[in-house]
Length: 360
Image (cartoon, one colour):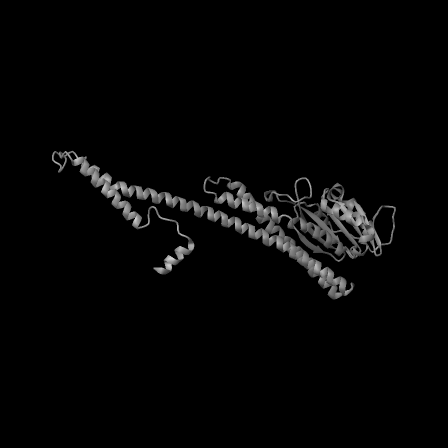
């Protein structure tokens, strides 16, 4: 559990137990394994540093790794749970949407302190700490001025990971569309395709939960500023803009996931339409073949009867007459089918079909 102090005009510093520095607010970055090891002791340690008495139900929420994105508050603090994107081993964007792994990050926000609880490995948090601790003189004017502002910076970094998913997701959906619409091979990987669609649906639901939680956080902030004006108008405007911008980013991810899910659904529908069209073409060919051979079968059946007297049966040229008649029937049927555009027809464009429809 690391503690950082923020002071106007002074760079961020990492505080140890022996330090007792005056500060505007502190940031306590804790790991979930610290809470799991001894929840009661961790609660006492937080109370000693921040004078915050955490509710037992919120401690249970912190320990729950499957907790959805949510917002709640008490008279002492606000708690926001936001699920971040991670892979099985590290906090990086996974290229496989079917392996969409997330983990909750807990934000406990007060006017004087920010407490975050996360998993042990987080590239996002490590990068943010490095940026705040290094280049102190350059960052002095850009240090967060309140726990809420620091929370928004962390949330913005977490949402950026979701924004990075859009390109690999789009490439994978394009690949699935090509596999579904290929004409030379039969598509059989339906289980993987179902996993892809479930991952997109999961991402859509996840973004919806995040938007609801951020909406409640923004409403509570606006209500507090309306009741008690504690910040300059410029600072309030900046935080409001950042809250709205953060929600807009999550909404962009949600809309992109919804569009990709619709595109995947359309590709599946086109696949079945193409399969049905190919089946109809095969049945049409078989029907035409049966129609051509049906009269020939009738003629051979008649002259294959076991009657003693059949006209032309003993004619020396009867065989050639019969072959001529059968050839004539075949040519006549093929000409009729060609006239009705049932065989040897050319594929028409959509515009040509539209013009033909309006002409008739």
